[in-house]
Length: 251
Ligand code: 6PG
Image 1 (cartoon, rainbow, N blue to C red):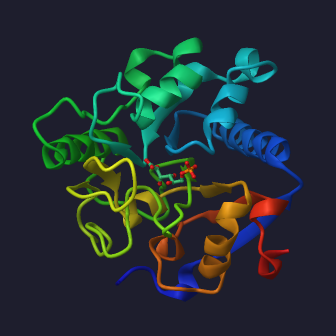
Image 2 (cartoon, helix red, strand yellow; image 1 turned 180 degrees about the vertical axis):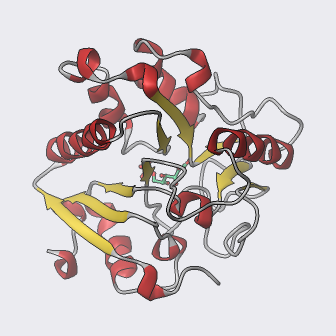
Image 3 (cartoon, helix red, strand yellow; image 1 turned 120 degrees about the vertical axis):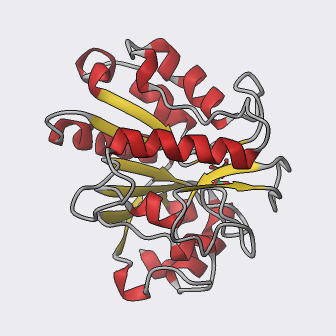
């Protein structure tokens, strides 16, 4: 795999007692990033089950009535190539968990266009959407595309929809790619941002909870050749996890 040199990965770990503490800490980090940005804000969401309670928390007080929702644009790091209404849709999950319940202009919700013919066409359209939002077709490390990118860690070491030995891992030019074959359930094609696009952020925040994540967190922090190990960020990269997910090497 060819990605960022290891020296470019500045990864820091935060370990908190349990799931509730992960939810609280993640929510506070997201809200802090929002508070730091004076104008338009861009947040890139992730799928899977771990972020759902964080999304729900954002729709509750005190955030519900204090966050400047109209200034925030929401994107996804990856999605399953299924309709928004499908229970496997990452965008559908986030809409149901929080976006649909908040005063957010429809134009601020940038769902991957999974109604198109195939994941590759959807990827091209999403790339155009990102470039027009950013105002350039070249990413400048001094001007991050996102204020925050949320990420998850799969049991096989995948992140976003970048799977071990899968498609898109070495992509340096395209911002978004279609993935024909998911290597883990749900086995539907995917659309995913590539590593350089995900890296264009002030903060990349990985969320992990539960003992089943622990072996893979250990492998990432040991530098094993896995997609999640090769994720990098132009800004901070924070791995937030509970005690159960934390191997001895990160405590
Ligand atoms: C997806 C994801 C994926 C996810 C990890 C972790 O669409 O499946 O975006 O990369 O973040 O698989 O998922 P869990 O939080 O469910 O463990």
